[in-house]
Amino acid sequence: MYFNSGDLVKIDDEGFIFFQDRIGDTFRWKGENVATTEVADHLLTVDFIEEANVYGVKVPGHEGRIGMAALKLKENMDFDGKAFYQHVKNYLPSYARPRFVRIQDALVVTSTFKQMKAKLAEEGFNPALIKDPLFYLEDNKGYIPMTQEIFNCIAEGRLRL
Image (cartoon, rainbow, N blue to C red; front, side, top):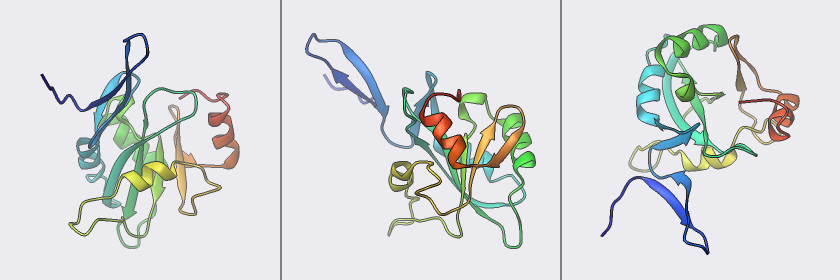
C-alpha cells in the first residue's frame, strides 16, 4: 500500500522511522506544517509588497525548516520591518511567520511561471553569500537588517529561533 502524506521519512537499521522533511509547497517547523502559498497570500496584502515567494530554509541544529520570504516591493516603495512584523503578527501564527526576508528586484520563475523555491532554499540566509538585502525577525520587535553576527549566533546556537 502507498500513501502520499507529503512527508519525506527515513528508516534506520533497526526499523525506526524518522521525519526528514516536507515535499512540495509546504515545510515543517516546530512540529507544524506550513503551507507556503497560504503564507504568501497573506504577505501580498501588505501595501508595499508586489510579489511574495515563501519557502523553508534549514537551520543548523534545528529539525525541519524555518520560514523565509523572498519579496519584490512595489515600485518606489521601501521595506518597512515594523509594519511587516505587525502584519504577520496579526495574521499568521508564530510558526508560520517568515523568520527571514530577502528583498529581490525580481522573483525568479520557471519557464511555466512557477516560483522557484528550491534554489532560494538552498542559498539559505547567510549574508556573506547573498547580496540581496536580508532581514531577520527579532522576537516581538520587528524585522531588522540581517548581519553576519546574527547569522553566526544562529549557526552556533547562541540565538534561539
